[in-house]
Amino acid sequence: MKRFPKLLTLMVVGLALTLVAACGADGVSQEDVDAAVQQAVEDALAGVAADEGPSFYEGKTIRLLVGFSAGGGYDTYARAIARHIGKHIPGNPDIIVQNMTGAGSLVAANHLYNQAKPDGLTLGSWNSAHLLFEALEGNEGILFSGERFGYIGAPSDGNPVCAVMGHAGLSGDDLLGGAAAKFGATGAFGSAFSDTVRLMNEFTGTDIELVSGYRGSARVRLGMQEKEVQGGCFGWESMSVTGRAMLDAEGDDKLIPFATAFASDDPEIADLPTIRDLITDEANKALWDVWALGYRFQRPWTTPPGTPEDRIETLRAAFAATMVDPAFLADAELAGLAIAAISGAQVEEWVLQTLRIDSETKEALQFLVPVE
Image (cartoon, rainbow, N blue to C red; front, side, top):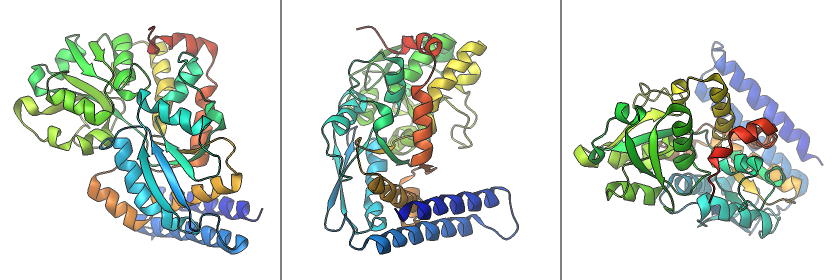
């Protein structure tokens, strides 16, 4: 196959340019790096098209299954990328987004794995946390083997942030000190909504009850506004956009962040305590780090098992090109989306690392899987 060396060259060139910029080399601006990386990607794609002649994707439609409801973070990112990625795929296929909700996106992941045709025309974006629960062997609802998916890439990493509504009458210090509260969640486990709370309760002594079953983050936000629950923990990259009106509100209607999973340079949450730093036991810190691996990549784009390798490589190159496309980045900035793209190859590496955790770690993290 002629395409593989081209894509390998692309990866090397992109990495080299990024490293040069990171090292502060004279005369190399971030704009230069972005432009050079995009040109390298476009050259690789042009080479693929020239090698093959008419593209498989010409006149086709790609369907992207999003495991969460419309209006949430997954949906927002998926639609933003879908508006641009088609022009970077030889043949310029149409891209349609279909929301397939249920079990914290597990319905979509299972469907992609077991029912979608492996032809490169059906993709999925679902919660990477399910991979940890596959490793823990504690969820009978997981009907897939994570290492057999094809991984196209992810638009960002993730940072779960816990926040409480003004109407709760509780401060962050109250909650971190053990005050009782109810937080909303999309499922009993397998999402930032539920897992972050369970980890805090187990490792830091908080006393937060989970109210699960909401169909997506938009419904959790509505539950907070209607005082069904008092707060929630969900990705800052989502909260800062889809929850903006609540963050900017006053009084009872205000959503107040009080703790983050990871340190951030975003001034809105930079001064908040990180949950890892609140954990005093070193063994528990290590368990936290295993769980956190899934947040190195968020909202990954995946293909069914058995998808031809050449189509996976084409989609990976197109995804990489989209991530540095000025038009896409302008749209992302306008929408407030944080973009820190992760390659499909890197996602695949972290997936394998997650799935191969040792038996002692599995046993220690089993509390994340509630007994029905």
